[in-house]
Length: 614
Image (cartoon, rainbow, N blue to C red; front, side):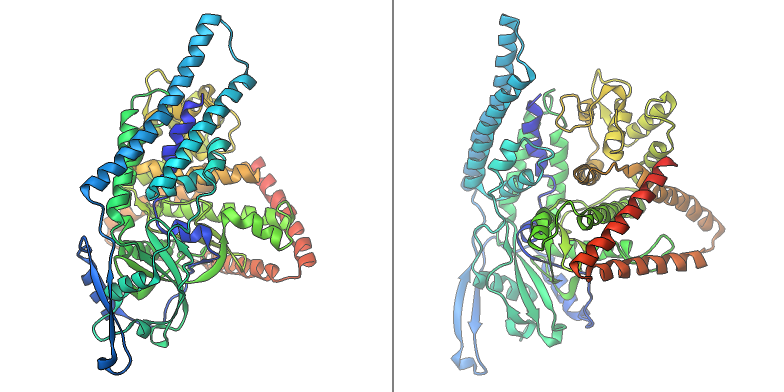
């Protein structure tokens, strides 16, 4: 039973690749959606040209502290850290393997020990006794893992952070042992980061002070890949507060080596029945994703692309996004430097703590109402991105989902995004409709239809799995309201009878779709709200399929169809008014705000009950 718990440690790395995880989860500040009024296209062209070639293996930069007179300038030489040598990479890999293999084998050994004892004595441990045995095993494994990560740092620190944040997926021994890993690890000297900025952003004749009127020396967050500082732009560049993310020099080879180690470990145990998923497939997907993690130009493009998706409705009309999305500052982006708008807030992982500081009970109507708003917002945004365009934020977790000071919800960290193909989007949409339209959870015709669509997506079922396996996997991923899964499977991820045990292989293109659905499902479980993604995404799926058919017909006619309807305008006004009302409630005095929230919560629960009866 407990063997799959350790295997999930590998999966934990999945949402933790991007450098601003550290910034977002440790700082009180994030980026927000505002645009600069100036146009820096010429500068942007220069920066893109600079970024077409990677930084050399080792760099030495000479910076000058000067006044108006060049004769009074004093030059300072700054040498960048060199990349790991081949010997250092081998030493790092050897240390990882020497620690990881004994941890994994200790679980196999303990499992074999229990089986042998049972075979010779004929006595089985009670559930409570077995739990005590495995808890002790978890404590040993967790401490060993913590010691290894402390020594190696790098990508493994990111793994520790996500494990600690996923109490719903990992044994408490692991989440507690790894909870002390913070994002502010080994911050680089500010002089080194300024040198990177000068090399990447400044054009001939410019000084650092020509771009930044202020630049805080203490970082907002220092992570494995990048470091983030608060700054203020000069009037020439808009004069606003910004967050500046700077990549650590020579970090790429270290982190790529780390994920290669995890991939090799997963391959070693690929055929093991004890592991709940094919983690080799997971890490292969992550390896491809990680390549773009070091290119901040790609992240800036992703920010704008997703912003365009969620700020327009299905008819292409402007609409208010349910969440705040980050925007890059035009002209101030390079491969290693990303300047973004800045806004204060706290990560979702610290939201309860901040509520208590403000005198808000986490169980109060205000908190419950916000929880529903959060669930709805994430569902809408991810549903639209995944099904409408196939391009979505692929690193959602409580560290980069923010609660802003004005009560809005922010989503940051766009270094890890995913594009899935049109056929996959179409099949996913059909899965949502098949789940939403099914007569019951046991109707053979419905299960057969859902299962066939799951297989069409590329899901491979393990030998000997029940025929209901594909349908059970689809329900488990996309319908959290199901009480009993077909095929006798359990809903819990850590259960030895989880639907993931039915999987032989999961398509790489959909690994990160599953990551998004599991996040939303976990959030609904913590809020104790039965939540069916298939039901919520069905209208989007229906529009997507109808839109494909409609677009094909329009193209065949050689014409265009872009009608603006009165109902679309009314819908836009309604959405705008709802957002204004929500922010107005947030500005009310505390006692009045609580009363208004209680009324709103009752009305929302009644509406949810009516919809559930339909």
